Amino acid sequence: MSVDQRHRLILSRVRDRGSARLADLAEELGVSAVTLRRDVEHLATRGLLTRVHGGVTLPAEARAPALAGPPPTIGMLVPTAHYYYPGVIKGAQEQAARAGARLVLAISRYEAAEERAQVRQLVEEGADGLLLTPSGEPGGSRAEWPAGLGVPAVLVERRAEPAGPASHLDSVASDHAHGAYLAVRHLADLGHRRLAVVAAPSPTAPGIKAGARAGAAALGLNAPGQLDIDRARPPERLVADVLRLVRDGGATGLLVHNDEDALSLVRHLSAAGVDIPGEVSLIAYDDEVAAFCSPSLTAVAPPKEEVGRCAVDLLLRRLAEGPGAVVHHLTLLPELRVRESTA
Image (cartoon, rainbow, N blue to C red; front, side, top):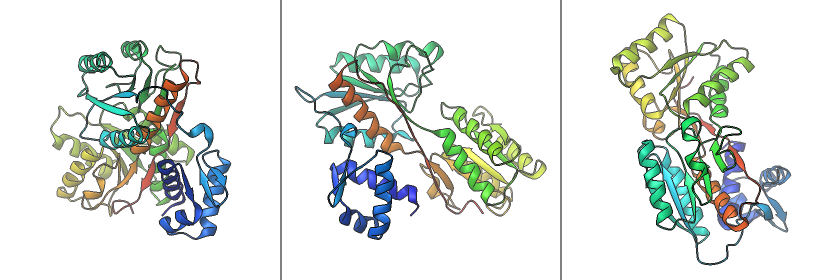
């Protein structure tokens, strides 16, 4: 278990219980008392935990404030409940339940008109606050509606444009640029020097591409090749383009967004005689189903459940403290899960 994984588990345990004994944490994580104390000291130094006699607790400012009156109803809008967002929903549901709040879910299916209709219905049915994942980044023509809902709202896995109408909203999102950097660094550490990013159009893709470029530059590599997935084209065309990147362009490391496209690409490349990871190493982005491929795929895993938990905490704080509370724009770092597809 990596240090980052231990830190995440420690924070998760303490957040779930409110406090924890050091001896219990060491036993649950299977680490020595010395290692556990070192981890706790690191987290306490960053202000994420508070040491108490024989244990740890959350800092006072990290605890969701108590709400007066009846339990609040939280409306949650996501684009889909079938990919990526089940983890976000799970984290939000668990955190809302711990706080005694009710979570009501709405699905937009990535349709702008549908998401507005769903949000309007949530508000009309009595939602006290909203967790919003618009189908695209809330900028340009999408900037106005999240900012004028009449109830507090938190953007989830989305960022508002700086100085835009929605920039005053609380938000929590995974740092996908950092996730892409982790992938590039892993491939570089394995000796790969020519990399490429294969990505489907999505709100996540720009951050992944930017992180891959920045990571390559920081590590002294050439800018990664870039191949956009066009779903209107037959998959054979994409495979042919990737084969050119690998066999003509010399790319030996691929970062593919998302998992489903990565699994499909692996099958087609294998059928074309490409050995993974012998000829090319491949990293998937999202880690939804990457572990179920053959070979199992190394993947970047955004902290989906933690995003949901933090979103609920931000909304409850806003409901308790009102419009004068400090606005939070939280960024959570993904982790890299190494499996069989990189060498």
